[in-house]
Length: 286
Image (cartoon, rainbow, N blue to C red):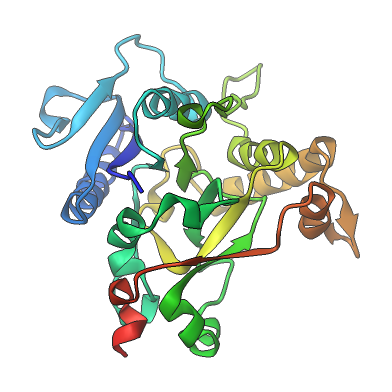
């Protein structure tokens, strides 16, 4: 399939975090360039010395910083106007873990470049496995033979926005999907969850939203967030989101949010297997 570009939203705060955030972001850019992708960054808060010659930029020159949802939409518009089949849309601190332990993470870009688009029928948006939420070592051992020959997609309507592969709906004659802008109207501060709402909206429209089990996400800047500056703030943000989700149609079961029931309601298959070239998989060489 046609897949050539990593799209990254990048905000550099004018505070003590800036140097660390820029260092992490440059490591990220180096990583994805080395994997053979072009990099397009939506840059906010940048000074002249922050730009790189090997990266393309869309620069916010308005003076008012876009929150995550609208920032992602800037890049989505650029992607939907391209001829690419899928894009990779990320925050400015995301790579994949490296090494044989992490299945196809090292080779994922090439696998996706080689795979026929029709193999991903029914898979419209997917994220790499989040190791903080999904254990993987036992799964990789148990499913070694299946993983050697296939990409395994597990249904996940509650995706995170920090690292997503997104189909070019516009290219194939469909209405494109964008993010909502979630914020407190009194303070203007970000309300967590516009990325989850994105996945829920896709699911409601019958689009397949999945976690890719073959690759493992690495959040290099988890402890250096420009908007969530403490564990307490992050915890409170999660609690606020949990209170909002029932208004978006997510029910509960045994006291927990019923994600499976939500996806079943819209007839999203629980799993999709996409055949891949065997030579591209690390596990084939084990």
